[in-house]
Amino acid sequence: MKRIVVLVSGGGTNLQALIDAQNRGEITRGRITCVISSNPNAYALERAAKNGIETEVIRRRDFADFDEYDSALTALLKAKNADLVVLAGFMTILGSQVINAFENRIINIHPALIPSFCGEGYYGLRVHEEALKKGVKVTGATAHFVNEICDGGPIILQKAVEVLDGDTPEVLQKRVMEQAEWKILPKAVALFCEDKIKVTDNKTVILK
Image 1: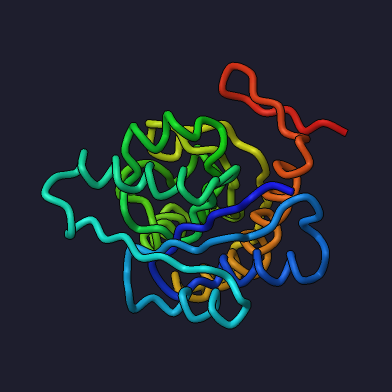
Image 2: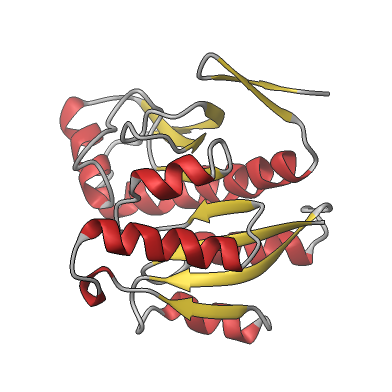
């Protein structure tokens, strides 16, 4: 049974999707053992507590410099014996120590079809604002491993979502979450826990 540690910063809707999938028996070989927040007031911590999941808080501003924070987060994840780290709306940049210590063991969900609308600065509503500005007819979400290139790690799963006339960034964001993010993130986690993801040359193969 793999130990899953989820990193959060806000409301925790993607965390809730993972908890719900776990409760439905869809993540068969893994268990969320800890939720770590960069924000002590994050509602995601309440979601974890309601489901009997251990929580921790680690804030970037409590450390003198980024390397010190990077070391502390790496040590915390190792202390929690994390087999898999999931970024579920975690708004603090990960450093090279964490990324190297958990190579191909950190999964992120991005609210667009990478390589579109991704990279530095593309998070939250801005992704959907740019998609609407460009006039795309289809957007979606991508579950991918994390490396040192922002949104540049191996893609695990993608799901398309139709853009409709009259969409606002907020309306599109909600549709992408409901139709794509909340579906493929738990699926990617389940596949990892079942040892069904093979990474070669920054690409993944999903094993049958």
